[in-house]
Image 1 (spheres, helix red, strand yellow):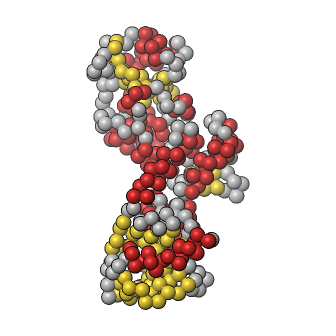
Image 2 (cartoon, helix red, strand yellow; image 1 turned 30 degrees about the vertical axis):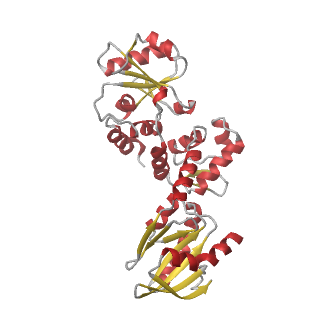
Image 3 (cartoon, helix red, strand yellow; image 1 turned 180 degrees about the horizontal axis):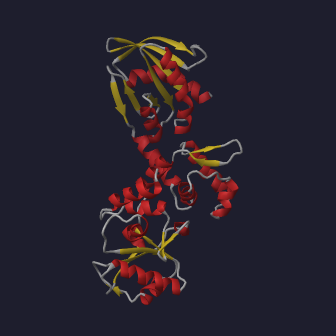
Length: 348
């Protein structure tokens, strides 16, 4: 509350700094508008037009806090003629900014981020702090251990999970699970029900944000040549050989997609594996090659990549979530195949 009071006191200065074309004429604190009490209404002259700026302040500008304020701002705006709603915080995240824009709400924060979408005054500023903080937040949210939980949520978007259940299922410490859930709640990707169980509320946004961050490390890929030219025949050999030798594997990229959502022609075969790759190379009779390999063994960054693997025609494929992530960052028409997979199998 103390921080919110400090922010309220700075609002006239923020308006002068961010919206120089606007002249403040009158400030009304906590006006009562038919049961709605916004933090402030400011009467202004905006390039010759009289406007009333409806202000709602929160100490933090993450999606969860913004979503709490939207009903107040929208209802107040519907009752006040020539009004425009503005959300103000110490810092507004990138997703928070997007939510404001989607609801035709302006925003300002103490780090220089600002969006005003009036007809007579249009201003949009993105401060360096937003870029830095957003990058740091996403790095933590999509760390290998955290994505064990995120992958499970995306694979079963309608399922209700208990926090202890998530912790035990994916061998993640209970305290760390609470941290991940807190971040997901803060970003409004998930919600809690009356029994404190959590489930996805915005699977599309969560998958999109993860895909923007995700890359397969080039160092994790071992490429070889096979004398078998036909990729389908090569996949049969990989599946039969590794199953016989009890080696865990899963096809990905175009090879994996060809089994669950066929759309593109392909030549190269990619698969994840567990164990020493040299043994696999020997069993599959692969040849070392400096360039132009046709078989690519990928070392998984975390064993949760094999979560909810699929078996199609006797061949193992990674889950649709992981398959989408891999395809989305793959340069050889991966995005096209990724979107087809999303439309046909993921459906959000």
